[in-house]
Length: 413
Image (cartoon, rainbow, N blue to C red; front, side, top):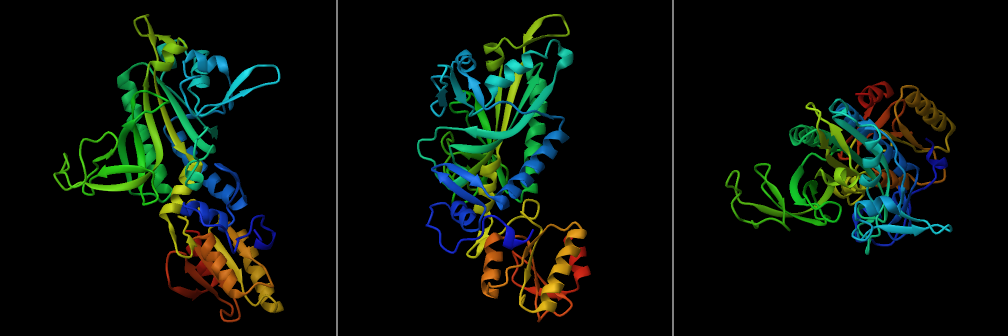
């Protein structure tokens, strides 16, 4: 991609935001704010989100889940069946010109349960797991923290259906393992799994996946020596108490929730009379689970964890491009020709490359823009590099001069 043609350039000045993800994603040209809690994803942001979604899709498919796409507009009657039309405080409600009422989906139990009812008849149809990656809407009273908490946001949610609690528990552990793989691939390795209240969407307890950062909205009590962690809201322990697992002193930290999983038991199955015939010929209610990852929230969380005073530092699997090629001295014909030849060679080798081909821009601004955007590798072509190329990783200070072939081998690892 030629940077001169990219829609959404870096901005020299943006207003100061409370959340670092909002400031950097705006300044670097990844998002644009339409209104409070509502954002447009620009081309760079869309590429990052697509990579996050593809990682999620691969890991969900690996555990046997099937992808579908459900509507975002829900008839009121479905939410009345679950008695949530009046109880979910963040529910966006809309009335058509024909006087019909709808909800803008904040979650999808109200559509997936009656959908599955049409197809599940006997125990042979179970277990089943369905997921989709889509937009959600929540009427947040105070959207904040950039794309971490919006009124419209991206979400992957998966619903599983089981013959009994034992089968559900097996799948629940599969989800935990898959989620940890997803977050690790997105560059988030120190994830804490905590027990928390299900809130207004379920009345059961749930488990949250949190990443420690000062920008977080959740307070965690956790142990740095073992896996123990609890949301401070429901914890009976405090900072400096002894860990019940290993007896080390407990710590306290802010964290960002990046995923959650719920045991729905038979709650929605009973609302919609979702049943199956078991091995003994008896009718039983289906046991359900719900598993969510906020995709745009995950993007914002990555920025909160990976940035410095210069800008964003994208982990390699979710970066918009693998390498940022910068041409200096482009007013000289031989340098310009070399830059375009190298750019075409990188593309031919299937290396994702953003090429800063701007001519009337200073070297300093090009380098600053590259640091702000945060692509993992920076390649520089100039008079200084001769027939070679200067390569530097975004998260390291030193660069080196190598041949293009060496750079390609490194980038393709």
